[in-house]
Amino acid sequence: MTRNKVQAIVLKTSWVMSCAYSQTGKFVASGGLDNSCSVYQLDVQSDPGVVAKPPVKELAHHDGYVSCISFLDNDSKVLTGSGDSKCILWDLEKASVLSEFDQHSADISSVAVSYDSRLFVSASVDTTVKLWDLRDGSTKPKFTFRNHTKGVNTVSFFPDENSICTSSDDETIRHFDLRSLSQMFCFEDKGSKTSTGAVFSKSGRVLFGSYEDGSIIAWDVLTGKSLSTVKAHDDRVSCLCMSPDGKVLCSGSWDMSIKIWA
Figure 1 (cartoon, rainbow, N blue to C red):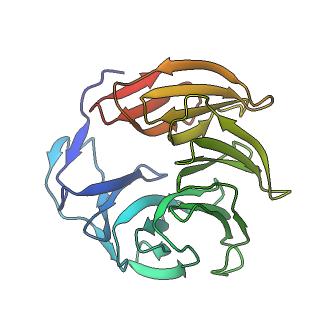
Figure 2 (figure 1 turned 45 degrees about the horizontal axis):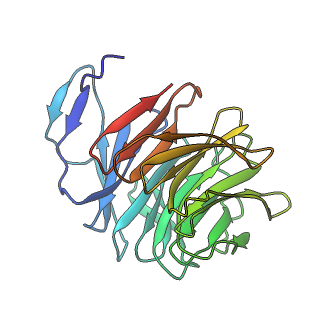
């Protein structure tokens, strides 16, 4: 890994709140305060460096900022969440709306899609997390988790997709089982600090949580106890993700740095 820039795309707006890399590696999408999702085609080998070209698709239907984006079904569809409290499923080729999911009562903060694109979960400022089934065409949630007491910041799937984890302003990270539709563990640090993100290790044995004070805590999923704490950043950790092979954890922060942990 050289840490050299591979490609930079000039976006049509600087007010970006979310970006996503497609499953096939052909597209990258961004969204933000312009209330739309812009999808750009990538061609790193033949067109390296800074690229100034218009998006290949503009997905515009939200009435609020776009807070989260996810590609699914081999890039044939895109799921977006918004400050208008809706999630929208798009047909990427036609740039048209397939379904609207409008059961939240406040801003959508995060969405996560299962690997086979059958299910997705949405987290909201309204303190709830909703489970949706894309197979039956319904726009009603399959279940709503109401355990959090403040806004939910992120949601992500367990590796086997039978459970999810959530992080919240109520200073907790919670682990929910999708089969029993119940909470398994509540991970809470005695430092009383907002949890900004949570992701599982590849095996699922460890749950990594990020916090507003710049720390990252590794939690044991089987016992609910803290394994270790790292003061990772000098400011709020704004995003956290695990590499597909499970060998690298990446954190981004308001201290204007991105760090790779191996």
